[in-house]
Image 1 (cartoon, helix red, strand yellow):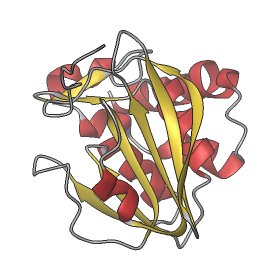
Image 2 (cartoon, one colour):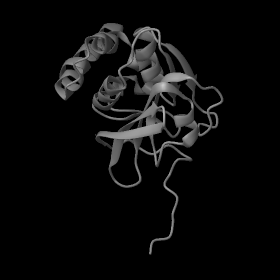
Image 3 (cartoon, helix red, strand yellow):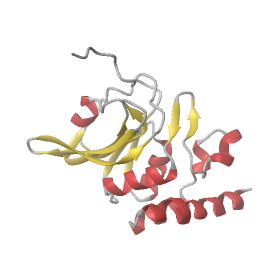
Image 4 (cartoon, helix red, strand yellow):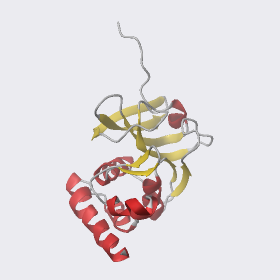
Amino acid sequence: MASDFTLARLNMVESQIRTADVTDLPLQDALRVAPRDVVVPSDRAHLAYADAEVEYAPGRWLLRPRDIGKLLQALKPRAGEKALAIAAPYAALVLETMGLEVDRIDGEDLKSVANGGYDLIVCEGAVDRAPTAWISALAPNGRLGVVERAGPVGRAVIYLQGEEGAGRRNLFDSTPPVMAGFEPQPGFAF
């Protein structure tokens, strides 16, 4: 069975990742070996390499392979950097494979981040808007990658921590489910 997943992983990189203009070679190499099937329940392992979001825990999903590949490439991870994976077990595996030091949070209060000084933060679930605490946890020149979704289609975005605050850049459309507790709050419109 493991050989089936090895072939599925290679096919995922060739047919979903590389075709989406993910050209970073160290990232491609990590995606070829990081076992996506080990971060989902065994009854869903057959879905791990499909072109779909896969629920790995109640209310938590892995991004589509294309989307996590594009998001990680935009974050420009490099060996030796300090990263935080928020509800992102597969991204954490890929980053560790690339030689980053990765802290993980999942299941706790995800809106607050106790530590800081991260070069890179990634979240695989959609949120209505990136919490301020996540942006504040970035080191100077740190990058946060997340999908912000307040309607039917979300947008993968990067926040970059600069000297005078964080800037935000849109990347691509993405439609993962919104994580529980991160839904858009109803408001008044005039």
